[in-house]
Each structure stands twice: as structure tokens, then as C-alpha cells.
Image (cartoon, rainbow, N blue to C red; front, top):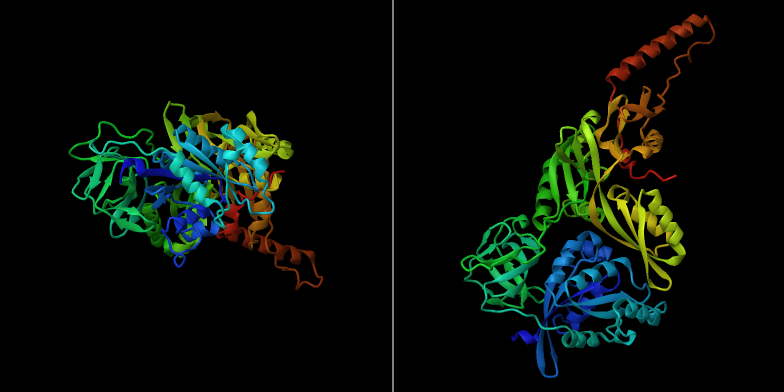
Length: 599
């Protein structure tokens, strides 16, 4: 097919604005899926994606559509909607020439809509604005179309109004894709240059790389290599998605498809890398390739120590499909053997936890999430730590740096004060504000990541009655006044309960944590002291009282020395028991650090 008859586009939207539903209708209208095979969210083939209504992995599909007697090849690249996967979104956008911007007529423009829109504009894409869910009684289509017009600088009448659920006006979207989005450019005779915008692992064919070919052609006779690491690839299969994998002989400039590489791990074939011909390589790789860097770290431990090997195997299998997951073995005095895992964000962590529990049938304990800190020592050495237990001695530390984020919160103006107060309490500070529409405001802040990863989003939603949305990106590492907050139970430090906190907040956090733990740790036959320590001194203490046996029950009067003798005997027994006794710490105690209500 000629280049002029090809169109590569993606659909971008905020979570739950109808992106996957629109993709379903497009697949139906181009005849790719029959009524019999139709299920909701065709491209979201993971159970978790269907349940949470969120696209987690990018996917691609080739459709054919006839207009004015010409047949056009439409390549839809479906992108994840959640902020944790923004790197995958940016790579998918580079593989396209246009983007369909879907906005919910009942909700209006939201934070991730804007974040993905700005990414699309940076990638020089043609934007087709689409207003979805206009059939709902709560839709205010004219107001939202006006907002979109102000945002994009276009006529509100140019915004296509559809209902993806019923299929109303979806044919107008297909026509707009052909009319407004330019065909791809590329020279079939140049050396091969193909961008990998996603990959997944197949147990028979190895790593399957999803590619957009920018120049040259790829066929089964080729010998390829990856430009970032020099790994050589001999294709096992080349094909396109329609929507299932369909082998073909050749991918040429402008095409979107897949190459089954036979590689044994997704790490060797990362998103954003450039595939080229081994014997006639391209002069330079595609710009913008980075390693996705974990931002949030947590310990994952099996509830039953015998499941350690099963957990190790499960993490290895998950990493085959998800190269952004990192894990290293670690031990904890309280939880024994487990793994320190790195995630792109809190949502990514939740997805991995659910997959371990569902797909691999594991009972696991997750410790409180932390971020990666940079520690500058007095001798000038700089180390990175992702667990409070690894923090060196206080006397050797020059400064501790923590990651700061750019945070955008999009909210109705009624909640301006509530959002300001929430961010201020979390150590963030205000940078700027914009009014994309008369009754909505975009507030820009800078905030430490450590303050965001625990309950921030939930609190934002409750304070704004669910109307606010947010987007964030990494800014820089900054030196902060931080200290290690340790918890001692029965005089023994419990590494899994340690955290790194702001020095000014250490006293209040320590006090609240000790109070919380006092209610969670069961009473023993001896008294247990719970202490919080920071800066080398104890800042808070509470005692869990011992279960008492009334040893005086058999004394009906008589000499007082007899009572004293019995009490003294009991005291000695308790003292001996305390020396050898172990304190049982329940699982809820490890998550107590997450549940500290802000006062």
C-alpha cells in the first residue's frame, strides 16, 4: 500500500474518559471484529485492565477503512492512561503523526488529559478533539467544547461530538483521521530504522517488539541489532496486529507491526530503543531513549517463609513482561527473607501486588513504600539508598537529598483553598496557576515525592469530592533536613518499621506511630516497651501492659510478707521471660506507617 494511504494515530485521554470504548467502536466499524467476537475493551486483554478501567500496557492494531473509493490503512496505537506509565505514552506518541484527544462531556478537561496533550504537542502531532459521552443526561457538551476551543485555539464547532458506547458519530472520527492526519514520511530504500514503542514476552517466540518503521524495510531474511546495547536479533516472525498477531512477509517505512526476536528477556529489548540492520545500520538512533527509572521502592516478603522460591520465580516471570520492575533480595529481622522491589509509581506497585496474588497465588506482605535518597558522606562519597535500613551512621553523613516532583493539580475553583492547605501540609510549595476555563484552575506545585506516595491522592480526592485530578513528573534531587525514625520493640530496632522523615516532623510522627503500634501489638506475658528514636535519642515511648495472673487469689488474709513473697516470685519470672521472650508483630503493624492520620 502507498505511503499516502497510511495513517498512524493514537488515542489520548484521562483515565475513564472512554478511550478503550472508542477503540472498540473503531474496530467494529472497520469490520475487524465481528459482533460474535465482540467484548468490551478488546485491546485491554488483562483482567486487571478490565476491572480497573485503565490501560496498563500499550497495544497496537491495524484497520482498513474505505472512503471515497480509496482503501486506507489505519494503525491505532493504544496508550496507557495512567501517569505512572507516561514514558510508554511518550514513546507511543513518537510513533504516530496524529492523536485523537478524547474528553468526557460530563467531566471536562482533567490533569492527565493536559499532560498527555502537552506530550503530543511536543511530538508535533495533529490533534483531533473529540467530546465523548454526549448521550448522558449530565453532559454539558457546549461548555466543555468551549473549554477545548480555548485550550487548543480551535473553533468549538470543530470538536467532534460522539457517544463511543452507542457508536453515535464515530464514523466522523474515522473521516477526520483520514482528512486531518498527514500520511507518514519515510524512505523504503534507506537503512532500516524502527522505533520499539512496547514489548512483551512470549514463551515460544521470546520477546516480541512492537515497532514503528521510520525508514527502510524489515523482512524475515534480515539480521537486526538494537542500537543502545548492540544485541543482535534474528527474526522468528514478523507481522501486524489485526487485532490478534497476524504474520506477514514485510514491514516497510510507515508501517506499525511486531518483530518476534527470540530474545529471552525484555531487558535486552527496551521501550524507546531503535532497531536497525546489522550489516547496513542507520547513522543514528531515534532521539529520546531513556531507561525507565523506578521512583518508589517497597519490600515484598512471603507470609510463609517456604514460599520464598515461588515468590522469586513469580517476580522473574513478571519482569520478563515488565522491564520497569526491578528487584533485589533482602532480609529483615522481622520478616526474614524477601525482595526489595522498585516501581514506577504507587499505581504500578498496586498492579504488581495484585498480579502476584492473583496470577501466582501468593500470600505476601508489602512494607511501607519509600523513595530513593542520595546520601553525601563527609568524605565526599555519594551513595543511593532505597531503604531506611541502609542509611549510614548519622556522624558520617554530610547531607541527605530527596527527589522533588513537579505537581499539577486540576480542580474546580471551589476547592482552591482545600488543595492549597493539603499541599502546604505535605511540605510542598506553590509555583504558579492557570485558568484553562472560567470555573477550573490548574495549580502547579513543587513537592517531595516521599510526601506524595502515602495517601496523597486519596486525600486529594476526598477534599475535592472526587473532582480534582493530578499529574506529576520528576524535577530534581534536593538536600533536605531529614532524619531516620526508628522503632524499637522490647529494646530491639525493627528495620521494617524504620522510615526517613523530615526532622521537624519526626517528633509528631514518632509519637503517632508509637500510639498506633500500642493498639496493634498484642499483649504478652511480660511488659513490652515500644519506643521511637530519632537523632540518636528516644523521642516517644509507650508500654504494652503484661497479661496479669492474680497470684494473690489464694491468699485470704494472713501475713503481708506472704503476699510480698508471691509478688516478688512473679516479678522474677516475668523478668526472666522478658529476657528470652519474642514479641509477635502482626502484619498490620508494618502498614501502620501508612495509616497515620494527619492531625
